[in-house]
Image (cartoon, rainbow, N blue to C red):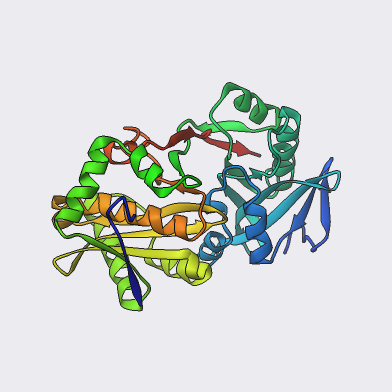
Length: 335
């Protein structure tokens, strides 16, 4: 099953056990969330949600041996944040916890005190001995104020380089999104269309396995570490129709592939592969443009370009989309 996309811009346990009730840490309470739909609704309230905090992402990690804890944080009965923590347990005892780009705040323009309360509560729950180390990459912009907040909440910096990326605003008309690209990017999309590149959304088992094979081969050839096959299969199973695979074809052959994930009203690129034949006909630009259109059609309000190279910054490919850049704090440790 597939459908084609237009390229033309005009058409374009041994420790604490938490019940479903509230567990208090000072003025902040925790409520365990087990319902995927409710978790998704909460994510939609976050100002800048991240796919690594999505329900399906956590479920895929659980398949690799992690224990997943999803918590709603409230203060005086008001929802203020959500966090998905990955716990490593041995014989039922938590020995380490990893939180990536969380907790995510649900309050617009929160005060510094509220942010401090949230992060202190997270540290008190997961970062206190004898229940292992807490490694946390906060969902906070890299500012001096936020570095002070992390110190006051009891965290110590561990790694300086945080997550950086850029997002496109999909609330505007799709033609406006196209016109916001740099001239070279618009030119590349038109060149791909002229060369006969087509983009389609596919959902067959063979196509998904094809994409996994291309991704594994890409990692081996370029020497980088990314999601493994088990994770991708479990992510697709958990996300259902929110896991979107696109292919770019030239002369009937797939020359590029891209996996997108919808979480709340945001879209994130999970894995991508551009073959040599595809690069010659600008298939990377074509499939990305097709993905932007498709994710807007599915109700996404933002499109994340998928991160930067921590050493070199944004590639010319990603910077050409002219998204709004953001940079988060690096990793912290709580003991």
